[in-house]
Length: 452
Image (cartoon, rainbow, N blue to C red):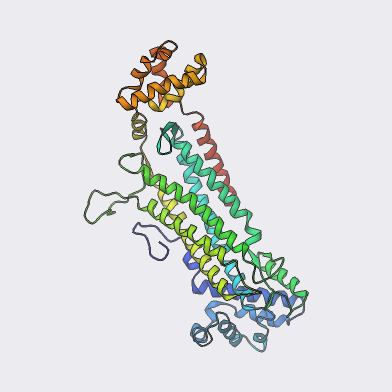
């Protein structure tokens, strides 16, 4: 899923392009420009030099063959770009590029610039998803189905309630993504070992200037060993992915013929199997679950990448760079599939209602027990209903019939009362309220996320 497109026709949300060569190099150029501008403002380099660097720091002006040859010769990711930018700058302006900075200052800050672009895509995708779920929650707020615990029928619920639970989690992920922005998207300028030896104390003002120009925060301590903020972001993405996986797994399960309660969109012409023409497979749901597992598996790598030795260590830089790229690309894919899934999901309330009757009324044992408990007390009522429920299940007889045979039940509840209490659609609690609240919450969070 990470590098190959899924067999389902789902568009690329654009995250791969954000982490491609052109975007990466342009982000580095943008950081070099911000560095030069901040230094010129403080009189560290000439104003004309910063202006010329800004004019020439555009990917399309660079000779990429020169950069690639330099990379092959030096094995250094940034120096060939600095050479090429120096070459195309007029006069001596190129000599002021990268003044007092070290490679990681530029590459990490540039990486975070692109991550913020991806971050904004994620928020937009979640907003789109929340709007779809808001409509679904409202439409299915009264669509009764079996509530299941431990894989077994528990008490009735509604599909809209189920959707409201998903909305609740997704809204918290929006809070987490917003809440970590000031910690994650930070500019770094600490020099070779993070000590600012090349610039002195004024380097802190330069770093603040870089951050301001790039719309970022400024690192309180620009140490090259600090990576907790990067690992935090990956962990937040893993939490988001885990929720998407849970939802995808639920759709996958409910799409089984044995359940038949929902179906993800299956476009005309989609082939589920080369040998079984009838197959309508939950491809979107499976891709979501598979992708989310990959994101979660990246978290240990990100935690390992925090174990940087001394004042810098290429080993951990390579690890976290890989972790960030993969986590972001996978998250974009997962969210796009979630949008596609819920943009065309089919819900089958009739089948949900049929599934409520699979246990022959046993799903309503709690309602019977509580009503009976008003006369007998809860524990005696529980014991009486328990005996009837076990007899119904083991002997394969109607629950209503078994209830009528229990003396304490028949003495306190009429057949009419029992029949009324066995109606599962009358025992969904405040599911519709949760669904309505969830829909409202989803729309509010989506609107705020979009800046509306």
